[in-house]
Length: 527
Image (cartoon, rainbow, N blue to C red; front, side, top):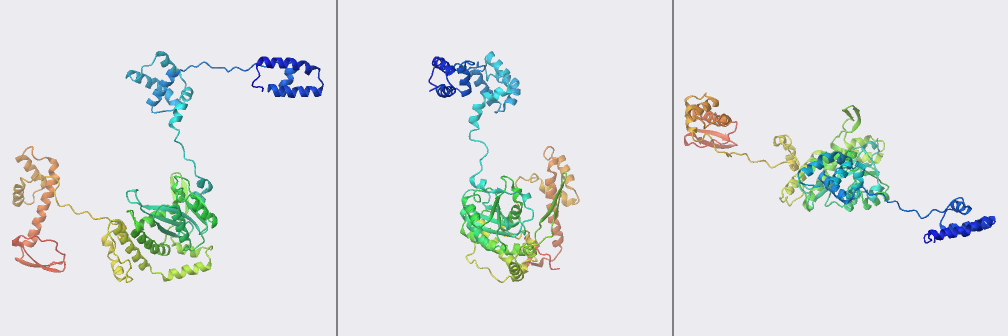
């Protein structure tokens, strides 16, 4: 009601109530104050002063309108200049105005009134930001830092420094893609887990990047771990931070933590295994389809035992930083199995099983299985079809015999071998000495000890402005080839007409008078 009363009405009400208030008792004054505050909307203390006559009711406050200094023309000119400055902030634009504004006017891009020009030059940095506040907000409306999801808010962050000396069972988990050089289409993934305390590493292939498949793989790997799964540390990918994994860890009492976004060193343990285990085994080529999935599953089944029982690894003991120098000290290399056997947290029954497995496993047979599956993966990645018989030959005698000479082939892992390039025997440019080569051969036959530089100088004298000093290297190669051919003729030209040689275990005869090529001759040539 107070909002609908006019000022004259309030004044009439005050005149009527002021006389009653002055003559009334204490109880009546309280009742009058209640009515007046209810009708007028005044505070009770203010109403007492008004009815006592010590204060007057203020009229309706008027809205004070400040005189507008910068009109629409100035505002639009400021927007154009801000855009021309590539949207810098107000403080930088204030310093840029004496340079940018004359340049725009000089090149005819702006024609400002003198008053608008003066207003722009006198505008402060704070006023510039205030004038551009709404304009800048439109461009930044869809930008900004992405808010954490519900799953991220419910999962605690664990950094690399938070791993002090955990018990076996706290694992870091990550996903490795096998997409090759393109991320389109469907391709396989590898779910890798590593134990921080012992370095025990286990891998499983996934047909797709899906949270449900991650939970199923973790459950399958959990039964084969030689320790109780106590915790999982993951990155911020949606395949990990979802309701499925949160519910799975909560129902089984598994502590779930995550790393900081864009801080890969928080998961240094698993990132190191992604390179030394997953990439070392499966390579970097694209893998897709069920055939690759089955080969990758069998590869990890053999690699799990070979890596954890027969591959010692280093473990960081301490890291000391002195200025810019970082000194790292490591424990003595041990296999994950050895670390679990030496841990007091490992039960005796588990130690007995590990010891029995370590004594019965054949490392050479495991390595042979790994090489066989790598060969199948290499064929599949190259677009070929692997052999239909997927059974592995248990006789590893040939594999054992090949170990002594495998180093001759260079890279022994089929997943890392590159297709050798064919040696180039053709010319890509025209031979500059094609027209005068017969003349050069005659010079060499008369004086075989001549240098290529001397021959080039002789050519330059006979053919001025035709041959340059930059062609010396080409002439040196041609002279070297000619001398090599002459050396072969000297070696084999003084023998009888028919000479027998043993070439790759085959008996052959070469008749030099027929001019047939010698080919590849072994070191064991008949005298």
